[in-house]
Length: 170
Image (tube, rainbow, N blue to C red):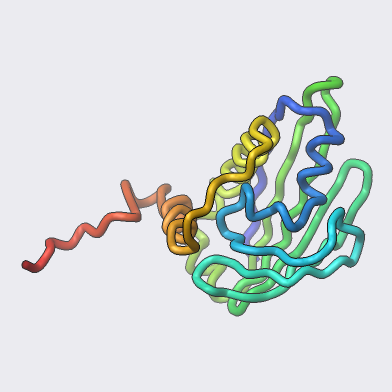
């Protein structure tokens, strides 16, 4: 199992952060790995959602812990299982410290291991952006979302994962 943790100070009240994290059907608005999450909001402990992830992977997302200061869910698709935990700490009425821990297992976790270290920070940045921009990100097609997520996954090791480095044949 591979694990990574990141912490960020987010300029939003703790309740606003909780609301975003408990809106499972809105997770795709700020997490490009998810195409669609189907179910009822807000999430409750044990709530299971049908999940469609990038590259056509289908599985489930289940909220495993919902407390005042901690929210956790697990999601599974073929060859990958992930547990995501969010620990919230109120710094002031308008600022929340958020620690995000990710644990992954499965064959895809091994393939994506080089991306795990930066993943919590990327998600925390997207969460903060979503809180400051209530409009969900625009989706023109699933392939565009896949390219965006692929770029995020590989940007640590490749200058631009969306472009091929092979010469073109004419």
